[in-house]
Length: 436
Image 1 (cartoon, helix red, strand yellow):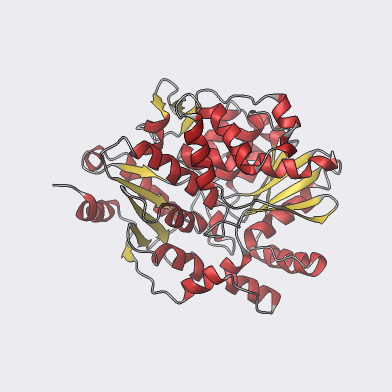
Image 2: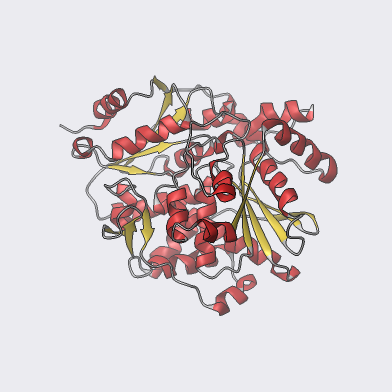
């Protein structure tokens, strides 16, 4: 598998190089040189395959030339040992529950796959790796759980102080061992900027082997395509075209869906659902991309003012506005509308949906008026208990907390507070990981 940079197609990297570098040296993003189309017979017979078998098939098509089939089976089996069920709210409204993994968020799929893939490569490397990850909520918890106690790998999680939920913060700050948390006095965009600057710092990388576990890393992105096939499979008996509705922040999840479609999954349309950080919906409406500082909201994992994966979306569709608009519709909603949706979903369907999924529900309600011939699958990206204060204040009642989250609430937070200053961040990294 050969990959290129979105900023310079002449820059090439192997899968191993792309996974461990995270970013190309020109600050682009890695993209596969070839996205293979899966056989029509495989798509037609999806209901005959297990989730793990689907993941194996997609993985073999992408990098079967690099990794032996038995090892791919081991990697996907280790990563995907929990389900991704579709729950129907009404005849045309369905919810893909992506919170059944260890950190109760969709990012478990990508983080666990990446940990297994890196471990496979590390068997032949005599080198320790430091993974840098910026999080606006769920990424950090999933990466912490996925890489916890993995030999040869240290994880440094940067998160914006006061801008993640209390339970999310405990997932980042209580594991210890090879997991460290940096609490940054700023926004998610500040965290992401620090990570990107570290990757571009040649002098730092000369002393510390760095990699990324954000969706900027292709190893995080590819496995997120697996559950689009799995969800589509579960609705195939209904024989109705499908639109995927994707709550979006850094747009890795939606980009993974576009990968799945490019590989042959017959998705009728994608709906990008955002909070007031509406850079991409605005682009889809006007053709103008205007990144700006992010605004804090209830759906904090989507508080991104300059989504990195927009580069990949443009690369897939030739940087042409009309091409993207034909594939994706965008909608944005504020906190008041989000709370109203949480209540409406609970009252009408008896279903608890977290703030991010609620934004997706609102986008589906708006989009379905324009395309009534479609059924929609809303990606429910995290367990509602991870947003306990918001859910309980919105619904006016207590909600049950899964035991694995309840245990975290009793643990002591351990983090290091830093300003959004690169030199101080670099000094911290060198003090902890630079080898003499």
